[in-house]
Length: 209
Length: 209
DNA sequence: GTTAGCATGTAAGGAGTTACATGATTTT
DNA sequence: AAAATCATGTAACTCCTTACATGCTAAC
Image 1 (cartoon, rainbow over the protein chains, first blue to last red):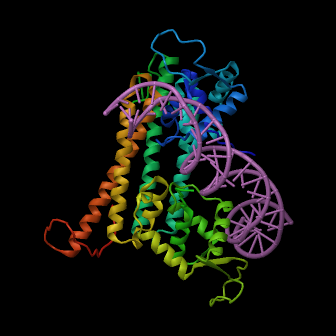
Image 2: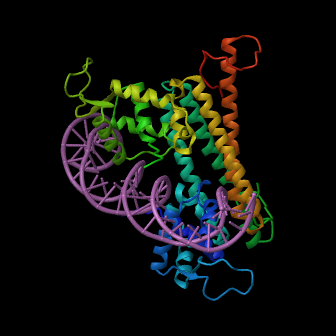
């Protein structure tokens, strides 16, 4: 009962918050926002949409009614979904939350994808929470690795090494993002070059690679 | 009915092939062999062991019977599992297979973890299959990215960029491993720089980092 | 003597997949 | 005219998780 991941629903809310869409288009966009690049199946998507309609978070408007303004629209039988007032409220609630669930593997990517609509403090808390989570894991794996080092063959070792390196790389990525967020915050709150902890001074409003 | 992933069972077979173990210990070792570093729950492990016993792949010997040689063993009530002849055969069958399933996300790590027991041709085919799989995905994502580039906010773009970079990094990792496999293959058969072709019989079977 | 870790399991349920089923539209 | 893609959905199933339940052993 406890510990719902529910990664799909927030992703749908977020995409529909940007623009109304029909299911087929949603599905294509979802793999960018969901972790990794795997495509979600319709067998998951449509039942989820149905349930969300049932709970009043979204409404599906059949596009065959009320013909759209431009003449070139022979496409029928597609249902365009959009957020209700309740759905918007619900999404806002999700965006403002920054509990531990936000920085778990399954949820982090979705939360990050909608950072543009998230306020700066929440962004920073999630990034830092994620960073802590990863370094904890790193520490844990390194300790268990130290105990069983010499008993592993070279391929298993290589796999472990590569895994550790991936996580380390992700931590460095987060470091860059965190630096950037702090830089932005300082510039927006205060014009002068006040030394707030570290000396970053990023002028642009976006993460830089 | 089609398309079983069954990543757990091969992993258990592989670990028990190295040494007999009880469930609790298996679980600790599994997260190295399974992708990422997450721990598997007992709720998955024990039913799986039970089913494997039922199918005659492994046997669980209660360690309370037949007291072990060394005197310092007061630990009771733990069931040590080991492979049966049928289990060994089944595992050998898995190891020699190199179909498309072997290089999918869920299976690749497990297959790689037991490369030390896999013959050189199969290793190479799996590594190359995985590489092709990843570059295909890369191409696909890049194309869909090109179509929706300017409509995304900077955080979504950053997420996409980071994802692409992760996959690119994985491809480079595979390139190194493939080079290594080919290098080993050539050096052991022939000292001269013969163009690979059909040189086999690897002696030193390990990747170097 | 109580907390932490070892050790084994079951029951209920969540989140997603594949396979099936249907039909319109666009491209070749 | 056929094939690919667009578009929506359902039913059965798989894999795995959480929560529950139990008891022993080591450390503090």
